[in-house]
Length: 196
Picture 1 (cartoon, rainbow, N blue to C red):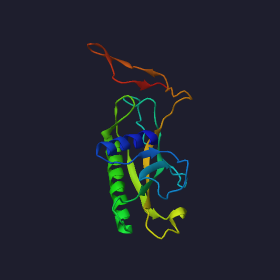
Picture 2 (cartoon, rainbow, N blue to C red):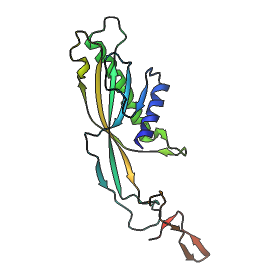
Picture 3 (cartoon, rainbow, N blue to C red):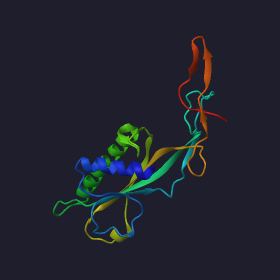
């Protein structure tokens, strides 16, 4: 889910003229000095995912199948490697560049998770998204530099994902339609109903 959300956010940023790559997953190199400007998003392996129990309906009528009794908050970190293109750029120029990239990323994630994104089947996805923090980092390979070659900003966030009750092959429980007698004959109650 996180990969899909980030991919859609990257497409939105590109459509809004963001000129640098937005990628998902660990990079092969950890060096930051003199590398191109970019945004790299990955799972935040330093933070714990949290789970919340969701209130399920007491009857099965209209209940989603598969049922999802829990929500998992997936943790992510976005590293923004920013280097201003201004000749003789100062620290403040690099910071301003990174803040602009951060703002575009935050807004793209918000739009995608609040229903502006579409899932694989084209359905509108409404997820929840929350920011958990951000900070400037000092990469080791830039520590001894006499000039400001750029800056790195880390944005930490979470995206919710349901925890569906499915088998190993992602199949939900069987469904049935309840038929109830009425004065004018039989009446179908709409929607799949979980049969336990």
